[in-house]
Image (cartoon, rainbow, N blue to C red; front, side):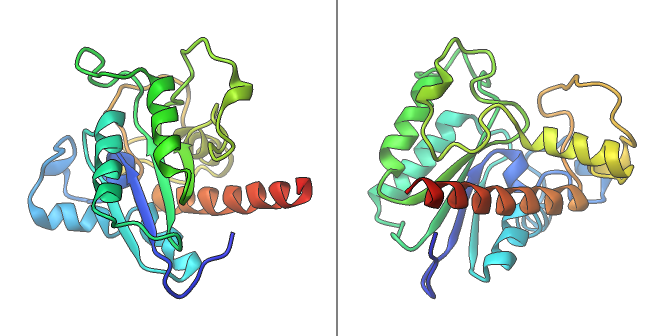
Length: 219
């Protein structure tokens, strides 16, 4: 993957991209739509910032608290329709919980994956899972997954759980969780803290490097 002086990092996702959990003010712990100050604090210190530092390029955090995958798709499509993307850009999509707003969604998890892949094929892009694997509960041939979907059976939350168990470092908002003891989760109930988002950026960066090294060997 080659980036240029004109490259930008463009990141799409839900609250795990928007940066929910960075703030130390407990008043906004469960609030998806806090004052603008908290919104800017979140989006300016989430993993897109730390990832952009590694690439030394500007970033745009397009994560939205409470967003489902169809909202992410609509946001990306709007950018494409308005010619906001460049072939120099690096685009990262972090999938939200696949069944959020399931009673209102037009597409299932597999459909939304391929719809996103189709519109992003001309661009330099990668897919990741935020806190729950997109296809975990789907009866689907995993060999058919687009090559740009990195570790489709893994998620950012798995990265943090593994790190927390190994190091005993605080990785969750408000330091409420010390060492993870089980694999249960409640949608929207927990998010990373600043340390957690930095760890996520390290994971994304290393996985993209690994992916491109493998790709180059195959070629």
